[in-house]
Structures are given as C-alpha cells and as structure tokens.
Amino acid sequence: MTKQIFEAVNLKNGQTFENRLVMAPMTTQCSFHDGSVTDELIKYYATRADGPAAVIVESTFIDNYGRAFEGALGADSDDKIPGLRKLASAIKEKGSKALIQLYHAGRMGSPELNMGRQPISASNIKALRDNAVEPRTLEIDEIEAQIELFADASRRAMEAGFDGVELHGANTYLLQQFFSPHSNRREDEWGGSRESRTTFAERVVEKVKETAEEYGKSDFIIGYRFSPEELEEPGINFDDTMYLLNTLAEYPIDYFHFSINNWQRTSIIDTDDEELLIDKYLRARNSSLKAIPIMGQGVLNLRKMHKMH
Ligand SMILES: Cc1cc2nc3c(=O)[nH]c(=O)nc-3n(C[C@H](O)[C@H](O)[C@H](O)COP(=O)(O)O)c2cc1C
Image: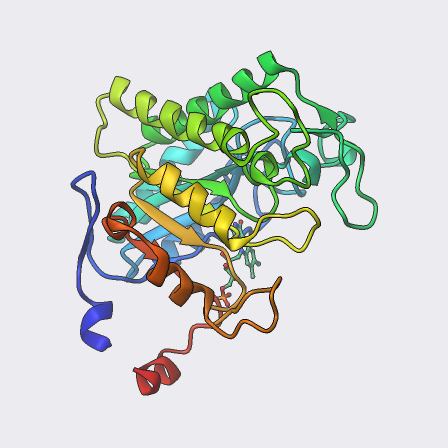
C-alpha cells in the first residue's frame, strides 16, 4: 500500500501526478465579496501544497450569478486572473500541480447570494431542501451561453497558470442538475432520455478541451467530479452514472473523481446491497474507463486501509 501511494500516475494527456495523494477541493469561503483571491486564501493553499501530487482549489463559480455560498471564489471575469495567478504560483512553487474546480450553482443558488437573481436550472423544479427557491428554466441559447462560461473560466485558469480544471459535476450543482431526472424534466435535445440529459456534460467537456487546444495547452488536465447516486425520485442511479462515465470517457477526460462522504460507501438507494460503490465501479468499468485514473475520498484512514489489503 505504502509503495502504491508514492507511485506516479500517468494521465492520458501526458501529464504525471508524482504520487497518489491529492488535496480534495474544500470550500473555505475566504474570498473577497466579488469572488477574487485574498492573501488568506493564498497562504491556506501554499501551506498545504507541499506533498500532494495536486491541490484541487475549491469550487469556483463561472458565472457572477452562479454562486452557492458567501465568500465563494470566482473565475467569472478577466479581472480575477491576476489573483488566480498568484494562487496557482503559490501552489506550484511548493511542488504540487494546481487544479481548480469549476461550478455553477444552478438551483442550489439563491437570490440573496446572486444580487437578487432567480436561480436557473435545466427545469423549474425546486431542490428538495428547506428554503429552496424555484429556479427558472434555461432557454436553449442560455444553455449554449452556460457552456461558453465554463470554457471562459477554463481559459482564465490557463492564463493564470493552473495545470488543469476539475469540472464539478457533483454535489447537485448545475452539471449534475442537467444529468438528473429529478431536476431535468426537459423534452428537447437537452433532456428527456438519459442520453439527452448527458449532452450538457458532454458539450462542456468538449468545449473546455477545444479551448485548451486553441490556447496551445493540449496537456491541460480536465477532471470530472460526480455524485454516483441521488435519493430524489426520480434520481440518478449507479447504472446512469456508469452511462455518464462511459460517455465522457470517449472525450478527453484525464481523471474521474467520486464525490462520496466515505470511500467505503455502499448504495444509498439499494440499502441491501453491501458492495462498495468503488468496487462496483471497478467491476463494471470497460477498457476505456480503465485508462482513466479515479480519485476516491472520504474518511480515509491509511492505517486501517493497510490492514484490510
Ligand atoms: C469544509 C468542506 C468544504 C468542501 N468543499 C467542497 C468543494 O468545494 N467541492 C467539492 O467537490 N467537495 C467539497 N467538499 C467535499 C470534500 O472534497 C471531500 O469529498 C469530503 O471532505 C470527504 O473527504 P474527507 O472525509 O477526507 O473530509 C468539502 C468538504 C468540506 C469538509
């Protein structure tokens, strides 16, 4: 086990993670009110960037109206680039690769956080949580615009010197909202069937890759984080997730990142099923998925894991 943790991992795009430890994205709510980088944020990340192969900077909004909480970090405008550049440099100087997680809150946002704007989503279905606000259904041209916003934020990450982005397709934010049959009730090409609900994620990945190529950075890392299941009915199940990952695997994804609160998690839908979700994934993955490293996380106890293997 010890040997594996310190073994390098080669990514499809030619980049290498020098070991198998990565700092998970964790929101600090330490940015300025407009989402720009503070000195505290730089110190926080610089202190932790000595050791892990990569540091994934916390969820960062791509749209001024897409915040999920106060003090969130933003990559929504070019004036954020100088601060982001300081942040990326502080991480890279300590030896870790610098990645940044990009998200839009969608229906997880609220008017209070977004200058009075009603949240947007694939459809006008409220999230199942207290005080959720009914979102506005995006028009087709607005969906295209959101894809551009992911690409623009990725371009800013490149200009700031980040080694890559992690697209936040988890934790019920906009990317997940398009894939989920609970939040996506559309009947056009962006919803309805599982295939159509996958289109938004596909187009975002494709556009970010195109942007990297245009920018002369074919080795820019593109990761994708996902939540494997939802409790909502209808909701995402593990088969759906395998469909999503198999589809995205055909695009240039460099790693997939599980979002689970415990690496030993079993199904939250079928509570009689005792197989770990990660084992289920390893059993189900095909040769395309085998070529893509996965990140697991949640309550990692290396001593206990060592005893188990
Ligand atoms: C304070 C805090 C903030 C977090 N913020 C994010 C985030 O911005 N993006 C994300 O994908 N996950 C976020 N997470 C989840 C973590 O990335 C990770 O999955 C979780 O902490 C489980 O791992 P652990 O048991 O090692 O803490 C956050 C977790 C915590 C505790």
